[in-house]
Length: 143
Image (cartoon, rainbow, N blue to C red; front, side):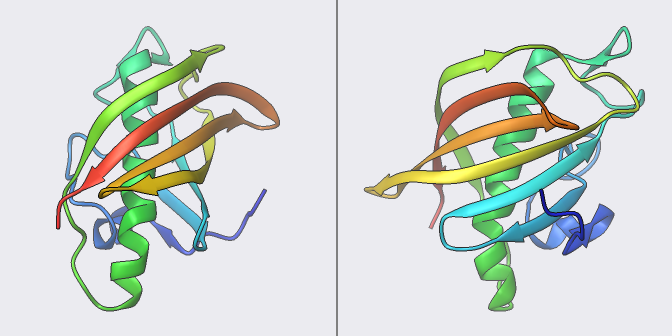
C-alpha cells in the first residue's frame, strides 16, 4: 500500500468534478497507465453515513469517484480540467462489511479493459489490511 499521497482534500477538485456535499474521495496516492490508489476518511458528517457506517451507495460512489480521479489524473498532469464521467454498469459488487466512522478506506483500481470510450475497472476497497468491498465498474468519460 502506498502511504504518501499526491493530492489530498480540496486538491482533489483538480481531478474530479464533484463538489460538496457529495465528495467521496479525499486522498489520491498514485496512478500509472493501468492502476491507481485512492482513499476516504469516513466521517459522521458524510451524506452517506447512517448509524455510524458508510452505507452501500456511499461505498459504490466512493469507487466511482476513485475511478473519476484516476481518469482525471492524466488531464491534470497536462494542465487540463477533469471531464465528466458516468457509471455505465456496476457488476460483481460484493460488500463484505460497511466501513465505520473513523475508519480510512483505501481503494485500489485497475483497468481491466477499454473499448468504444468505455473503461472497465476492477476495484478493491480495504480498511487496514481487510478487504471490505470489491466490484467491477464500467465508466464512460465524456469527451
